Image 1 (cartoon, helix red, strand yellow):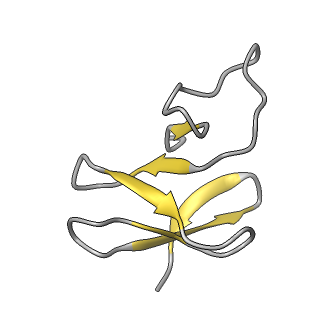
Image 2 (cartoon, helix red, strand yellow; image 1 turned 60 degrees about the horizontal axis):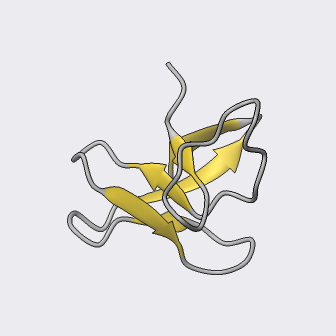
Image 3 (cartoon, one colour; image 1 turned 180 degrees about the horizontal axis):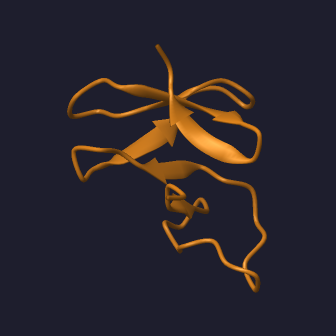
Length: 61
């Protein structure tokens, strides 16, 4: 299952919206925000971190 991703205005990315990803959907339901230009995404609620690996956003272990 692919994790949902969003642009800087929190608009879901799709085939018509290919902007840079600034947010990804966290397991807790909140949006994890990009912390650095190429760094991990961090959730402000549960503090889980996500990275992009092989085209998917996965939790950092």
